[in-house]
Length: 112
Length: 109
Picture 1 (cartoon, rainbow over the protein chains, first blue to last red):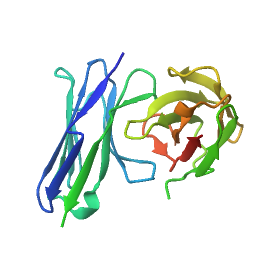
Picture 2 (cartoon, one colour):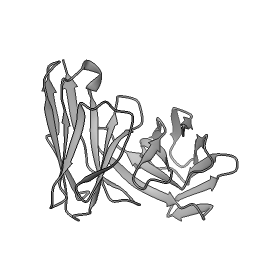
Picture 3 (tube, helix red, strand yellow):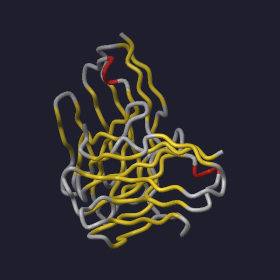
Picture 4 (cartoon, chains in turn yellow, blue):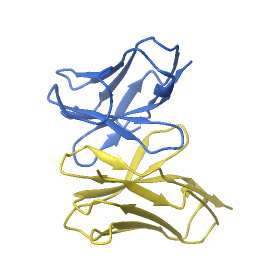
């Protein structure tokens, strides 16, 4: 059974610092790896999708890498802003599309 | 606006009651998934519907059931509610890149 772990559980940084969020998974037979953002009381917003054949994806200030052999993915957020404050979740997808195994998330606070 | 609408946004039930949660997608995608997110945890997969048929189920008991309609809207039904069913229930449309709704927060007293 796939297990996804996110460390740290919470993180507070001053505005302008770079953020590094870690995600580890137990089953290297992962197909896709997605990163989501969740604001309080809201649903999930997809940030980046790394497909099986890819090693990283970039969107603006966000970059996510995937190393299936070590069972790790990392989300980098450059030059953090207070608006980046949210919970960030990673999720692995196996051979069933739409069936995601989520980590518990990292709660990020960026202080002005 | 995510394109996936869930109702109701909040509701309170008592133990033993039944609840129906609803989900609709503007895109009309033929695949919908439901997730349960307990406080402080990541979402857990309940089940998925594809073209009105259940297409995969997580580790949830049979009292969690669903429907998908010809217009691809969907319902999640939970019978005999328990206190541990208190959670945010999320609906997601799509099969590769999922679009999530804002969720229905259920409190069971």
